[in-house]
Amino acid sequence: MRHDVIVDGDGVAWLSQFDEQFLGRFDPKTLKFTEYAIPAQQPGFPKGTLDLEVDPEGNLWLSHMFQSGIVKFDKKTGKFQAFPLPAGVVNENSQQSIIGPQRWTVDRKVWLNDAGIPGLHRLDMATGEFAEYPLPSQTNIRRIFVDNSTTPPTFWVGNNHHAAIVKLEPLD
Image (cartoon, rainbow, N blue to C red; front, side, top):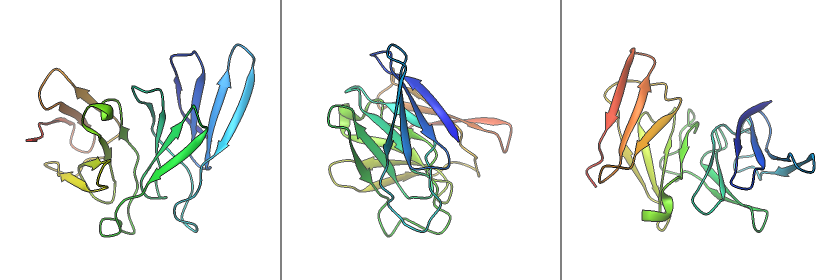
């Protein structure tokens, strides 16, 4: 089942698959469609991806849902790199549905959420360590907006469980 679609700087459309381990690529100039198989991180767990984003280097990033973690696709090499959640963080309810790699090249940190660990989380790409930023109440995070005009960036999250919005200002 197709989920998210984005168009990169070359005019190529990319799509995530909600229930399969594939990243789709559609070139509207040639009408060619290609699927890239995403390696499973947790065999036996439900497969699929949700959020699909592009970083400043043109790489694609996907939240890996129940497979635990996030996945980066290098368009130049055609290869995936998985970043699983640390073993001490993963639980039976872990599900990543949002990823924020748009500014990771600045500080080498990627933002994501996890439905089983409420709040926003920041993955340090150099160390693999996570920082957790709890939210004030249970939130079904669908999308986040990063305001890069502040230092550090401010995050805005819609809280559809409580008809509110949440502003997160990291201290570091």
